[in-house]
Image 1 (cartoon, rainbow, N blue to C red):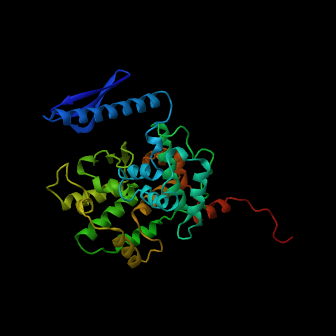
Image 2: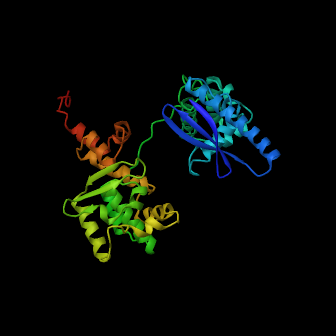
Length: 354
């Protein structure tokens, strides 16, 4: 292993070589024509080189990085949050750490601290157990990464129980509900596209992110399939789709005879910056549907009706593109109709009249 100074176009870099791999990192320093100033710059560069070398040696020997362990938890979490989108729960975690332990150092983290962090979240009456667990899990993930990166020697969340959450019942639509929605118009160009995309999602189980990126090039009318790279998992999925969905796509194709393979199937949904949830909620109310309509409800509906129709769990997992079957198992709730069918299978016991 080696860490050397390397100058290119007056910029000073660290040239790092470890295990057959070489890369360079910028120091942010620049040399000039002033000899005295250059001496000070090179002295600073040498300090940075030495610190980086110590850090790499520590990590390569399974030790924590002595430089990073002295930064605060708040600084470390803020840095991680800056790389996440604004909806990621880690941004809320930053606010809680600012409130609870703004000066705590990374090397002072303990399971007791994390347990107290979870308890603090649970005492906040405005947070549901699901939200508390979501915040805590984002921190668990970050601390595991800190161990891999050599920032922490041991994961402080090990041995700390997860926040218990009551089992949730996933809402879904029955076929008669979907028919009500299909019969109810949604005004405007965007509204019409939102309606089409939602009904198609009920037939395919596609997420909103996949509906937004769905293009005509992924449709095979002959094979009755969709080919799609899922936006969430980045995995390729090949979906056979029901005849009704194919007929639905034929109608959309007729509305756009000049389409190309690169055109979006739902162009207004794909390009809008408008929050479409309110469109769906109001549409559901007008149609007289009890459930609160949202994009993921269409996915829940597709999964539940597949299982209710007799599809096995493994097949539904592949159709939904889940990487874990435990995720698909969340949809195995039994409907009232299935309960009634099961009870009706029982024989008479001859208890009447005795």
